[in-house]
Amino acid sequence: MKKEFVVIGLGRFGGSIVEELVRLGADVMAIDSDPERVEDYAKIATQAVIADATDEEALKSLGIQNFEHVIVAIGDDIQASILATLILKEFGVPQITAKAQNDYHAKVLHKIGADLIVHPERDMGIRIANNIMSHNVLDYLELSDEYSIMEIRSNDRIAGYSIKDLDIRANYGINIIGIKRGEQIIISPGADEKILLGDVLLVIGAVVDINRFVNRAMT
Image 1 (cartoon, helix red, strand yellow):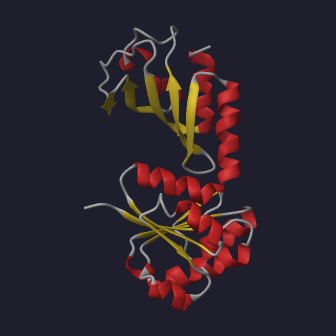
Image 2 (cartoon, rainbow, N blue to C red):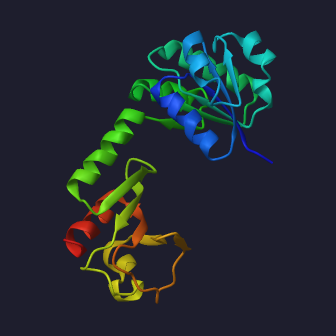
């Protein structure tokens, strides 16, 4: 059974979510108040609808309350974002992801019940900063202010050693939760797993500890 999502707001951020979810095989209802944006995504989304996200009756008529996950990707209109999130919460939508314009907006979204709050510009800035700091860091997923998951490409400093040899957990307080090796993904690799040159390590831990590992062990 296909996963079903609703994306409200078809700006650059919301539109990219629609495209990626569809690419991954999900059914997506795309909603925006701008007819031109809706027309742009009519051939991409499963269903594209012109609607006001702050109109409770309009959302109810679309059956939003029957979806498991709704993404509120409204752009600059913070009031509309908050009202839409409130309506979704009242409908009992199980999972609400909302885009925040700033920290104050994020606090309000959190208080009214958004399950996941994203800061696209800030998150992208973090990714870029990490990539600039180390060409070995390929991607960065923030879990909290202190913890993250990073994708780190192995180099000749650590290639040929096993996870046990490097003793990463004891030395740096971080864990390798997966290894991407070409098309293969090794989940929860064992201590005797040898790291090959070019492997992509999925590392979880405190940001300061991951950076310490990259700076000391890989440079």
